[in-house]
Length: 68
Image (cartoon, rainbow, N blue to C red; front, side):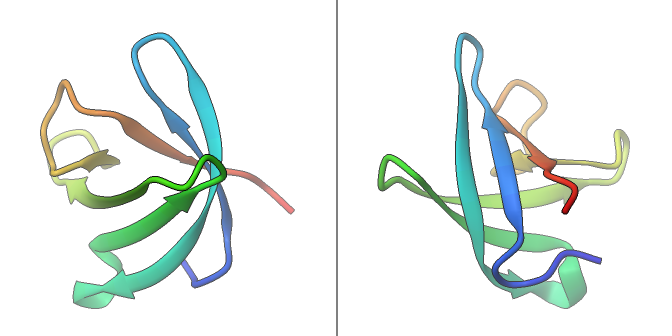
């Protein structure tokens, strides 16, 4: 289950940016993430792929969790 303060990686097409979970919504199905470069993105859990993607789209940036 995602939690506030968790370290994440945002995978764009050509780059990966570290970030932190700022807010968990909809019982963990939607997350607000702030990247280390200052961008704020909202990720939604895609039911078909079980991955968090920006806006829930398949071609959008993807979210990975960093293990502690």
